[in-house]
Image 1: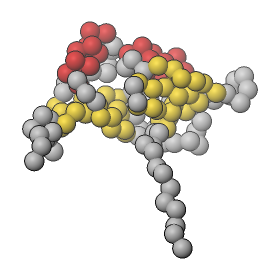
Image 2: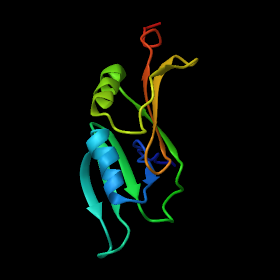
Image 3: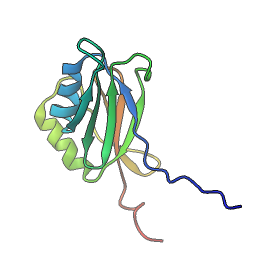
Length: 132
């Protein structure tokens, strides 16, 4: 008997948020993600929304049972230096750091959102991308 293996896709991280306006300011206006959709069961209920940037998809949730604040997500990125320069130009307070070279041959830009979640944008070093 042949067992069918499931087709798996990239996971979609869920990050905890506490304030809709702060979340939209950070993810949409600062990081440049777009709002795909939002959902509330009714007026006054917690928000659940999807944001995306190219093929990167994140879910942001005000629901206390969905996830824990202070999570981290790594997002592979091309042109990290240019993206960083664009963020610096926006002069968003309390969110900028420098690009760091890691011992595992990536360049990383680590940012914290207003809710304590860490977003790590990374790009593999060009030496690591060379064919063997």
